[in-house]
Image 1 (cartoon, rainbow, N blue to C red):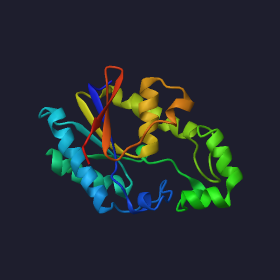
Image 2 (image 1 turned 60 degrees about the horizontal axis):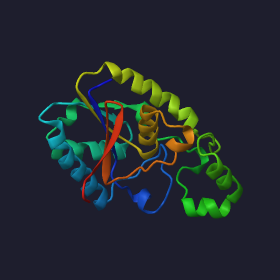
Image 3 (image 1 turned 45 degrees about the vertical axis):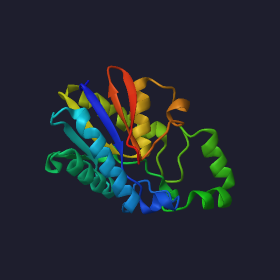
Image 4 (image 1 turned 60 degrees about the vertical axis):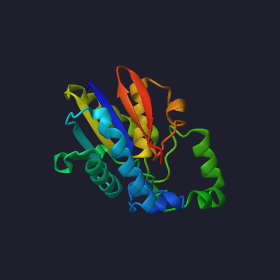
Amino acid sequence: MAEAIYLLRHGETVWNRTRRIQGQLDAPLTRLGTEQAWAMGESLRPLLGGERPNLQVSTLGRCRQSAALVCEAAGLDFDSAEFLPELMELHFGAWQGLRKPDLRRQQPELWARREADRWSFAPEGGESYAKASRRIADWLERIRSLPGIVVVVLHGGTSMLARGLYAGLAPAEIVTQDFPQDAFYRLAAGTVARFETGI
């Protein structure tokens, strides 16, 4: 495995603020989101020790926008980034674009099924965590051969999967992890460490 893997979730988006499910749709960063991304870059910079990491980014716009800010703040070369579709957020099918409070009210039985088994449940036309875990596991296996440090800008769901699979957590533990936008994680030597940005 690479010496260290840093996992950074994109900053807050307009849809995050209104509790709307994005999945593989997209929304721009809010002002707070741009500040969060910049703060992650500033916090990351001293941890890299001047090393030029491999930079991997989800292809979705909110991650591209966040990665550009992270790179500027951390002194990294955005043009060196590799954009990977396998890092995209889970596809939430028919639920994409809907607000979580509305879903709980309008589809209470489906929402209850999801809460009872978040690992295996998938909305109509969507992707379960179980299914998405396979693409993240394949990605983790591929980056074993990369030298040095890897910096990754991705999403809440795919970050949870990457951290959980790396740490060997059970499915029920993976889906209950935190997925902050004001902190990031380092996977190294079999451990997962969290770094706060102070935002």
